[in-house]
Image 1 (tube, rainbow, N blue to C red):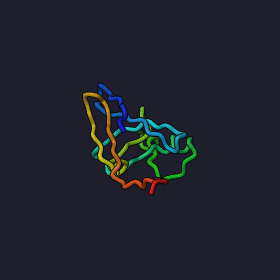
Image 2 (image 1 turned 90 degrees about the horizontal axis):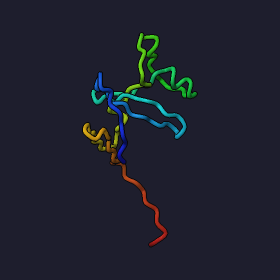
Image 3 (image 1 turned 120 degrees about the vertical axis):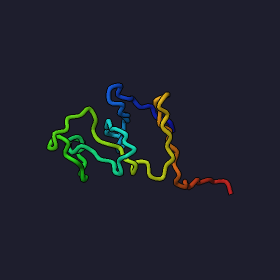
Image 4 (image 1 turned 60 degrees about the vertical axis):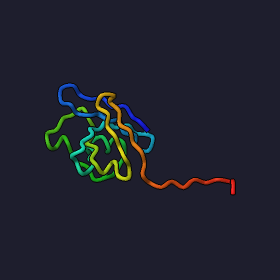
Length: 103
Protein backbone atom coordinates (compact mmCIF):
# COMPACT_ATOMS: atom_id res chain seq x y z
CA UNK A 1 0.00 0.00 0.00
CA UNK A 2 1.12 3.54 -0.67
CA UNK A 3 0.46 6.38 1.76
CA UNK A 4 0.82 10.13 1.32
CA UNK A 5 2.74 12.17 3.86
CA UNK A 6 3.34 15.85 4.38
CA UNK A 7 6.76 17.36 4.86
CA UNK A 8 7.35 20.44 6.96
CA UNK A 9 9.15 22.96 4.71
CA UNK A 10 11.08 24.53 7.60
CA UNK A 11 12.27 21.48 9.55
CA UNK A 12 12.09 18.86 6.79
CA UNK A 13 10.25 16.49 9.15
CA UNK A 14 7.99 13.86 7.58
CA UNK A 15 4.49 13.79 9.12
CA UNK A 16 2.49 10.56 8.86
CA UNK A 17 -1.10 9.98 9.96
CA UNK A 18 -1.43 6.75 11.97
CA UNK A 19 -4.77 5.07 12.66
CA UNK A 20 -4.99 2.85 15.76
CA UNK A 21 -7.89 0.42 16.16
CA UNK A 22 -9.59 2.16 13.23
CA UNK A 23 -10.81 4.74 15.77
CA UNK A 24 -8.04 7.16 16.68
CA UNK A 25 -5.90 9.12 14.26
CA UNK A 26 -2.50 10.42 15.37
CA UNK A 27 -0.08 12.72 13.59
CA UNK A 28 3.39 11.20 13.96
CA UNK A 29 6.87 12.14 12.79
CA UNK A 30 8.78 9.46 10.87
CA UNK A 31 12.27 9.14 12.31
CA UNK A 32 14.36 6.45 10.62
CA UNK A 33 17.04 6.98 13.26
CA UNK A 34 14.71 6.16 16.17
CA UNK A 35 14.74 2.59 17.41
CA UNK A 36 11.34 2.74 19.10
CA UNK A 37 7.99 4.30 18.33
CA UNK A 38 6.99 6.79 21.04
CA UNK A 39 3.63 8.46 21.64
CA UNK A 40 2.95 11.58 23.65
CA UNK A 41 1.30 10.62 26.94
CA UNK A 42 -1.47 13.22 26.64
CA UNK A 43 -2.91 12.13 23.29
CA UNK A 44 -3.02 8.45 24.25
CA UNK A 45 -4.59 9.28 27.59
CA UNK A 46 -7.35 11.24 25.82
CA UNK A 47 -7.88 8.28 23.47
CA UNK A 48 -8.18 5.98 26.54
CA UNK A 49 -5.04 3.91 25.86
CA UNK A 50 -2.88 2.52 28.66
CA UNK A 51 0.71 2.04 27.46
CA UNK A 52 4.22 3.16 28.32
CA UNK A 53 4.67 6.59 26.79
CA UNK A 54 6.82 9.72 27.00
CA UNK A 55 5.42 12.87 28.59
CA UNK A 56 6.27 15.58 26.03
CA UNK A 57 4.85 18.45 28.10
CA UNK A 58 6.72 17.47 31.28
CA UNK A 59 9.95 17.65 29.26
CA UNK A 60 9.12 21.05 27.75
CA UNK A 61 8.18 19.72 24.31
CA UNK A 62 5.32 21.52 22.57
CA UNK A 63 4.81 20.09 19.10
CA UNK A 64 2.44 19.78 16.17
CA UNK A 65 2.76 15.99 16.25
CA UNK A 66 1.66 13.23 18.62
CA UNK A 67 4.79 11.09 18.65
CA UNK A 68 7.66 9.54 16.71
CA UNK A 69 7.49 6.50 14.42
CA UNK A 70 10.64 4.51 14.96
CA UNK A 71 12.05 1.65 12.94
CA UNK A 72 10.15 -0.87 15.12
CA UNK A 73 6.88 0.40 13.57
CA UNK A 74 7.98 -1.08 10.24
CA UNK A 75 8.98 -4.52 11.56
CA UNK A 76 8.23 -7.33 9.06
CA UNK A 77 7.79 -4.85 6.22
CA UNK A 78 9.66 -3.40 3.29
CA UNK A 79 9.11 0.33 3.08
CA UNK A 80 10.17 2.86 0.50
CA UNK A 81 10.11 6.61 1.05
CA UNK A 82 9.67 8.68 -2.12
CA UNK A 83 10.64 12.22 -1.17
CA UNK A 84 9.62 13.72 -4.55
CA UNK A 85 6.11 12.22 -4.53
CA UNK A 86 5.86 12.48 -0.72
CA UNK A 87 4.70 8.88 -0.36
CA UNK A 88 5.64 5.85 1.70
CA UNK A 89 5.08 2.42 0.16
CA UNK A 90 4.72 -0.40 2.68
CA UNK A 91 4.77 -4.10 1.80
CA UNK A 92 4.26 -6.83 4.40
CA UNK A 93 6.84 -9.60 4.64
CA UNK A 94 4.62 -11.73 6.89
CA UNK A 95 3.29 -14.88 5.33
CA UNK A 96 -0.44 -14.68 4.83
CA UNK A 97 -2.78 -17.65 5.03
CA UNK A 98 -5.10 -17.74 2.04
CA UNK A 99 -8.26 -19.81 2.53
CA UNK A 100 -10.02 -21.32 -0.42
CA UNK A 101 -13.01 -23.62 -0.91
CA UNK A 102 -11.39 -25.03 -4.04
CA UNK A 103 -9.40 -28.24 -3.42
